[in-house]
Length: 314
Image (cartoon, rainbow, N blue to C red; front, side):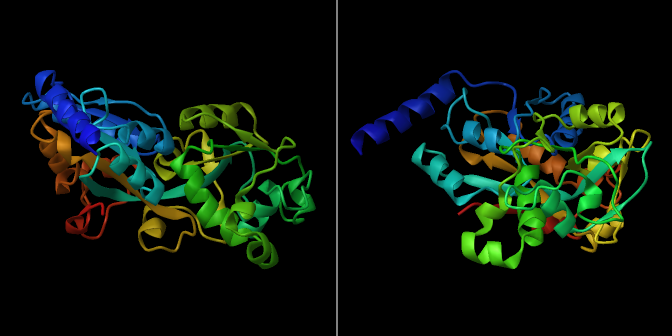
């Protein structure tokens, strides 16, 4: 215990002695475009330097965020899903004991393909059957349902470390999974993806998926609404359970694959790394994340009440 206390004090001394003058942010590729715009505007104010942001994926960002406190660790981590209990424990074990959760807004996950193809209506059961390792492993979409494309299944998906993938698992793979498999083998079995070719993992860069879809008209891809909304000249989003993805459908909950977006703040760095509180204030302001905020142009779906955005992680 004494060694832990000494290490903690030394890390505090390190922060104070060699403090950065620039905020360091890691995490979700989905939240990345929003935080980048906020950071640029924040930096232009002239009071603080523009924060450095790295797109590492939600899981990768949390690992870096929870490494400890000090100038060699991030001040914040963007996330496209809520922090997991095991990540909270990892943080606490490494001395990160004071964390603020900020809900950025809402997002939908789009199931997309090139604008060159036809538009289809998919159910969660269709998508599970196409992607699941425990499914029938169909070759063509039409093997699942004759209303679907009569060509080979090829789906570009973010990696397992992605928050988008976590959300897809809980909102699509779990919901589309047959009840008997869910009961007998549990939800993690429902999440298992095929390894025989139709499901193709892509890195933590949604732009790569979009570019691949443009070149492969029979491929489908999974990524956040904001990327789709800014790429409508290249890709189209397909209906899920008969509902088109839109700002309104995400906000009112009618679109079946929607989720909150977050970022997490290491409060022990506040007052040491300049500008953290001011950056959070900018991000959660009405002019940024409000119903007429500048992040709306990027596809962020605003919260009904920004006062509900900030809370302490217990």
